[in-house]
Image 1 (cartoon, rainbow, N blue to C red):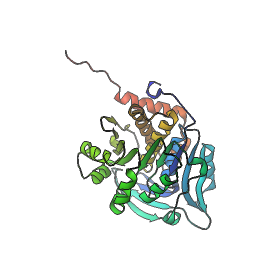
Image 2: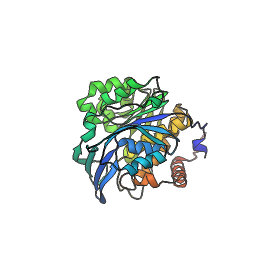
Image 3: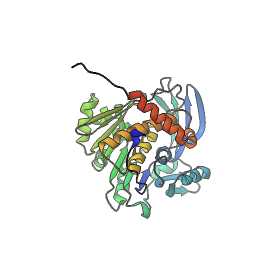
Image 4: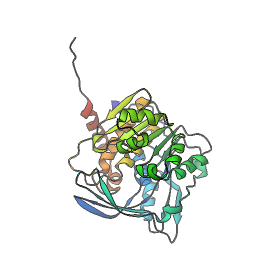
Length: 319
């Protein structure tokens, strides 16, 4: 396919740090009950579409299903960095979405094992070329970078307005150390103090990262560096059942593709944004990680082609 032409290199190592957890979701179209979720779960499954092996760094209690851990292992997601704590419970979040599916209310948050989580990067992963820092306390994200024995080729960080509210200074410090920041439009405005996303991007890029991704949910995603801007629309879906984890799925597809091709040019990041968006669209179709677990290569290829068709057109300008 012309939109993913690149030199593929499967030896580039990837580590992901984030939550492996339980969610309970209510939407206007149904409820999930207690299902597997967490940023690292979505990122890992999404990235596994492109990389043959990766490391996941997180913490779980003894209530977490071993079957899901084995499923990750079967997909090349190494779990030596997944801390298991006997007698303790896994992180749990419950939420309820409004009719527009863009806003939600938190019904319950139980930190459990996450309350004092100190990630430990396995020795064999400390020279990873690609690092994905999922949405966690900025001090925890920084501690992962401190454990790396060499500077990764690419560090991507995801965060949220909660950390901007309670840990802005540590967040700004870790942002100085990364290459790509992924946030949504509301968070970009809060972090920069600018309403215009173009002006917001200019300010955020001066904080340290060379590239910024602004996720706009059902309206797509923007990719910025100091000189260029790229926009990828979201694919219109007939039905959105649960958007939980879509942003993490996007991030996993984005960094997974970059690691697979070992190309971090802006042009290749454009492809990564499209591929990440395609994967995220699947996540919305079912509760939890179910849709990613059953996704086939044929389905992914067809979905990517739909994205290409969405923006592929010819135009004739007058002389």
